Amino acid sequence: MIEFQNVSKRYPNGFEALKDINLKIEQGEFVAVIGLSGAGKSTLIRTINRMHDITEGTLTVDGTNVMELQGKSLRIFRRKIGMIFQSFNLITRTTVIKNVLTAFVPELPWWRAFLGVFKKEEKIAALEALDKMGILDKAFVRADQLSGGQQQRVALARTLAQNPQIILADEPVASLDPVTARQVMDDFKRINQDMNITVIINIHHVELALQYASRVIGIREGTIVYDGPSAQVTQQVLDSIYQGKREEAAV
Ligand code: ADP
Image 1 (cartoon, rainbow, N blue to C red):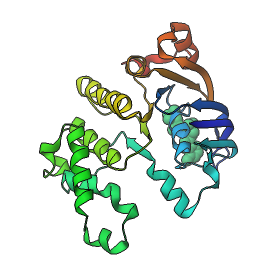
Image 2 (image 1 turned 30 degrees about the vertical axis):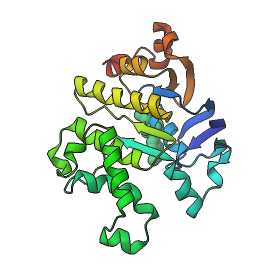
Image 3 (image 1 turned 90 degrees about the vertical axis):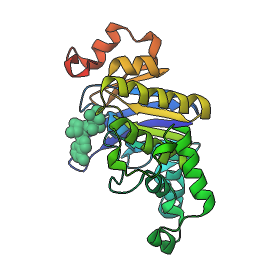
């Protein structure tokens, strides 16, 4: 379980991006975080794996106080949490399989990472992850030869190879066309349901959020203004989240 207790986040320039957040997310939930650009969605999800440090309150994941982790314990903790970005973050000039194998790099002795020497089990795990994402046939293709949707699947396979408990996704479908965006959302749903991995997605497509997530968290100016089932999100709720400025939020 992920738990925020009175969490605030102030950036070094003094700007308070999160204000007194209280939240509990159980293992296996599919949560969409919605709100206007600049509302604090990305900051919220990036505090969970300590890409950003909180500045007040307590944030725990399975009882571990995230702010107390450092060095090796932080590296081990981060392995439980996959991260997916809008821009896929692949090494585009190398093969798909090598991209997935980078999931194992943090645990390798330096010389194996340096030489790119991977064990048979690691190679099998990487191929299995590609198979789960339906792109095993692309294993030996260079990543930059793939479409955007396929590249996001490779990123998901790399995350799955890490055997994560939680996947955080920061605008994962924002650079994809509407049809491909739905296919990638289907992938998230399948991963969530079949593997009981908690999925937390920061997304500006409201329709996709409501269709795929079971729970929606609406943020406005660093404050949670809605937290509940996606089925209960009304126009009034959307108005309070988007303050009537929804043009950029439309699908
Ligand atoms: P969203 O994901 O909802 O678009 P963000 O979490 O990226 O919003 O940003 C929330 C607010 O925090 C914005 O006003 C943004 O300008 C500000 N912000 C983000 N990163 C920094 C930073 N490194 N330093 C100062 N302010 C920041």
